[in-house]
Image (cartoon, rainbow, N blue to C red):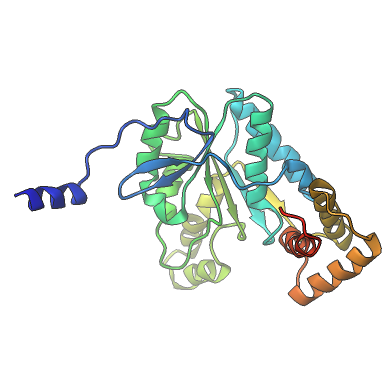
Length: 274
């Protein structure tokens, strides 16, 4: 009987206690069982080190600030080139908002846990705190139906999105789905236009679309110079420029992520701990 009781508890655990949001400013949402894990130290960079994305930075900062102040704000989709600081910007703006003495919690949810988002919102709705719900690298494949769980949360449903919750997502795709998936709907559906509308309607529910595009070589080098200054790495500028250009050529791309990877190598060679 005791073994059966333990097995039943594993299958259907008791309801979790109400989350204690005073433990941290950031949380991770987990399922099986449902719980919010506090994150005392968020992995992020200072907003001033994010170079070449000034318009997106200012727009997202203003939107987040007005939300933290209790005013209306839009859900935001940060889309575009890989490695250009989309997720870093969300975390940096959260830190900048806290630095302005505005209370705001960041809750990260994984894409595969989107079907549980209704249960998460039940916890958040009951709190007096204000939350940025964050999903990194949000995209959907051909047979993925998770996007339907998100549509009603963003804009729709009887309950709708709680007033104290806003949703930020990053993606390499503007419409969150591959182009061939949309084209396939056009070619196989009875009513092609209706099928396409159903697929792209999710991205339409984000009030803010912030595009991130490949950086120029000058911006790439300025990123590295900013890292050197912030972490106290002293180097000859001409030597650094030559090495950084060679580094990005071997990678076949130029982005903030590549700049950080080169800087990490440079700091290691200089004996600087990051």
